[in-house]
Structures are given as C-alpha cells and as structure tokens.
Image (cartoon, rainbow, N blue to C red; front, top):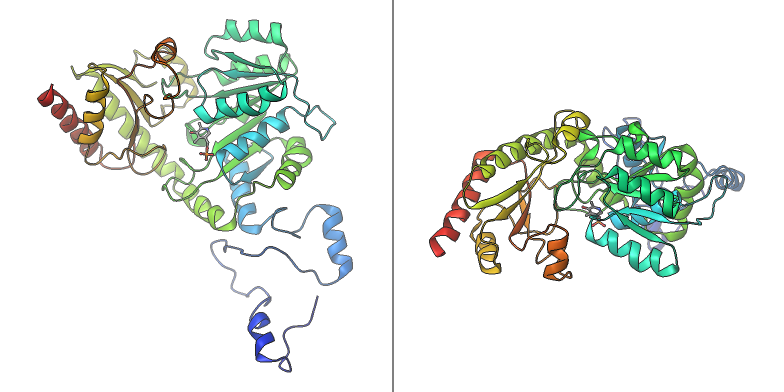
Length: 411
Ligand SMILES: *Cc1c(COP(=O)(O)O)cnc(C)c1O
C-alpha cells in the first residue's frame, strides 16, 4: 500500500490525500460506520491478489461493503439463514432470488423450467414474472396457494422448479401454509421462495419451515421509517455463495452503504415496532368489524377470516399489521371522500411504516385490471388497504371514525 501522505507534496495533492486511510481507531465505533468507499487497499499486491482469490475480504463496492455486510449478517440471523445478500430494492432482490432458486444444483447458471406463483402477489412481482420471465419463454403458472389441492395439481401438471408465494396476500390478506408448501416443493425437487415483506421474521420465519429462499422489501417494515429503499434475500449456504452473491455482482443492483445503515438502524426496533403495529391492527380490525358502514373486514386475527386457525397456529400469536376492508358504498366518490377525510392516516403507496397508511387497490395496485377482473379476484371497488402504524390506536380509530362520519354526512 502507498505510504501515508507526505509533507513534500503540494497543497493541491495533500487536499486529495491528507487525513485518509488512517488505521482504525483503538476505540472501536459502537455502531457500524457508513463506509463510503468504492475500493479497498491491501498491504501488498500479493494480499490484494489473495483477497480476490478467496472471495473473502473487500475489494470493490459492488462485491461487498462493511456497512452492507452488517445488515446482511443480522438478517441472516433473523431468518435463520446461512447468509444474506442485500439489494437496492425489493424488486432487485426478488429478481435475483428467483434466478437463484431456478439454478440447478451444482450449477452457477440460472435455467428455470417453470415458476408456480401465487395469483395474488404484489403487483410489480406479477409484472416481473410476466414481463421478464414469461416473456423469455419460461412458463409462469398462477395458482391459489391457499388451496393445497390446486398446488398439488399444478405441480403434477407443470413440474415447476420454482414456487413463489407471500405468507399474507395483498390486499385480501389470505394466509398460506408455508410448511405445507415447502413439503410439496421439496417433494417435487423444486425450491420455494417466500416474499416475507408483510410478515417479517417477528411473525414468521419461512426458512425454519422448510422454505429455501426468503425475500424482503426492506423499504417496508425492516427500514420502517419511510426513508429508504432496499431489498434483501436470505438463503441456505450453497445458494448464497454460488448464485445470489454472484448474480448480485453481475446484475449490479446492490444496496448502498447509506441505505444499509438506515435499514440496519431500523432493524434494531423491528420487534418493538412490529409488536405495537400488530396490536394496533388487532384493535383497529375489531373496531371496524362492528361498524355498519363497513361491509367486510379482512384481517387474519378475526375468527371470520378463512385462514384464521392456520394464522393463529403459524404466526405465534401475531397476525400482521395490515387490515383491509370494504366500504359498504363501493362507489368511487365514496372511496375518494373517505380517503380525503382522513387526517392522521396518510394516503401513501407503501406499507410497514411507523406511520399508518391507506391505499385503495382500485387506484393503485389493481388499477390496470377491469372491474370484472377485480371482481373475479374478490377485490371490490370500495376496498381500502390499511397499513397500521405505531401511533396510539385510539387516534387511528378516531381518524377512521371521523372519515366514516364524513361519507355518511355526504351520502
Ligand atoms: C413493496 C413490495 C415489494 C417490492 O419492493 P420495493 O422495495 O418497492 O422494490 C415486493 N413485495 C412486496 C410484498 C412488497 O410489499
């Protein structure tokens, strides 16, 4: 490594080099610093060569960064995985996760034979499957993952090698049996990818139930503060080293150190936030279910929910922090009036933040479908999806109450 800056260099040169590359301090930082460096230096060319050869050690930012590694480490532990790879967004993470899941054992090249996907995935995920994977000739088969007989039939008929599901669907909040899917996936020689964004490891850890790969949009609960985008994939050993890391280096959608630090910080309060948000959601759902202006509430914690028993067993007493509901008057005017009447709950297109947020599938996730297609999926035009935040539950309920009052007053 070059010598430390010397005083016989001109000021022009010293402005570039002075102060840099000091040895790490004796007092180690308590929290991981944000390492804003694109490259890393070694004592000798030989040491650099060894770092390249081993794949360990940092050489270049697209290959790895210590701040990002700290996040990957905590998420690997959180999900009981062997390793994790962070990406710039949830979508970049999903792309790499699907490619890795569709890489035959012993190979480092993706060769997907078929993808069996839940029918009600996050909208962009469905578009990714159709516009990238199906468009390249890879069969993408849609299936109701809550219907295990349908899953069995689809596996027998299409022989997919990748299964993709979310534990809680969007916006109907249907719950899938991850253990049952993992068993079927394994028996078929396929790999199960679970997008765990809505549940987080606080509610369920799919790898412990036999799933092969877990994906998160860290933009949601992991970050949790509506201030950053990111994605993360957690998997078993061979997938991380041979495929995920390799693909992230080549596709290049890596997470930056600033974002990694925000998410790392978010994760420290994940359990506290999640428990509070789940408790608030339970209070809100129970309150909504008793209101005459609401036709139906979708929330796995209510006994009326079709997979309530499964959720009670599989989620360890928490039911997630999302609540969807149908306004009894399901016209666009009432829907808009309701949203515009809210004072506390924000009409922002995301979920999992400390802030309570609402969206309407009609104008967001499902806007490109016809009314018939929406109806076929059970998504009414008066549906609201609420991501419950960490505010006082009484204030959230009061806000909903006032907005319901406003639509009645105008009816
Ligand atoms: C938001 C989201 C994604 C996509 O994540 P981005 O960070 O927006 O790229 C994927 N899956 C689910 C379930 C999501 O909610």
